[in-house]
Image 1 (tube, rainbow, N blue to C red):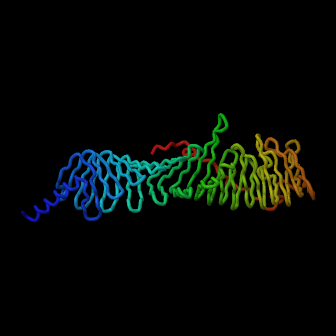
Image 2: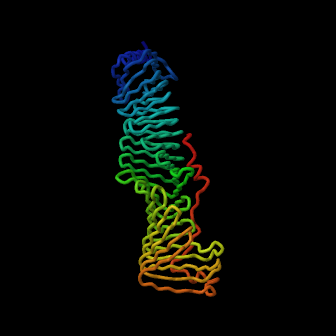
Image 3: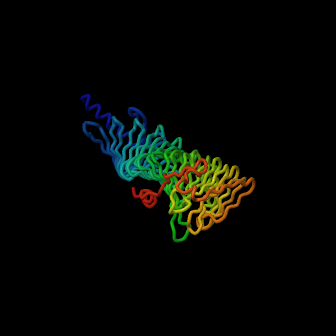
Length: 429
């Protein structure tokens, strides 16, 4: 017998031993065949191989693999899997129509309609790869992940099973159907154990509110970074260049925290809030909602409110300033504004639609009452001081009478057509 023929004989002995469920020591790790209805030895491209068909099952340590047909290359340890491929590693199950298993690398590949189930996470994709030793999975092409509260789609995703952490990249889209919230971005980092997620790459959040019969209100939030916390207090934090738009309300800030259960927004770092024709600024601003409707705005530190006095006189603005300002809202809109600590107001006067000068007053506490979006009455309490400037002094020189700190901004954010597309586009990846 030649040396080559002796080698072929040893290969056939290995096939017979593997069929009987006995561990065969290949270069690398041990694989045990549990079952196959048929086995046939082959030589493919000069490599010794064996083809197993019918109820194929084998395992390597704690990893179990089953399929309809398997083609194993003896030397390399690669096993090509076809038909009802299932890979189990403890509680993780990977399924696909076809795939491959690599003995020495302890790695599984899955192709076409790939599905992963890890107990708490269900994932589908066009391609999947699972590394046994580091317990890490990689997916790309039509990636879709579902958990108890949301659905995530992306171009690719890496799942770190031990750390319960995942990174999704490329056209990331997160949908929370219960809250009608959709968030898009270029990257999502999710930490399941910490109940924390971060979206980067120009994230945009869109929420549809249909609580009022016959109408749909849209909330849009844009920023550089968005972070979601679902620990003791559920909240969303928008960071850097934050823009908020919702019907008559808009805002910008460096940092905004949204508390969904408390129905409130905390704006920090140079916040500006617009409501209809009124602009509000301060060191920090808190916005409180009641049943999804604007209820109270609190402005703390260098509080300033300005609103257009007359639509036909664009250079005239009614103004209020102080250290603490509260804006109260009712069903018809802004109801009143209260200002404390160095409270000052400046209002333009009109008589029969004709301009009639400016009133500038100050006191310990100022209350301004509104009706139909216009000032109806002003009440000043404690330390009252006032000045009146007639129209002949004011006309054409309105800026000279403005309160200290007045600045009318033109960068009010708007809802864009792309925001509406985000809200109404379904997850058809």
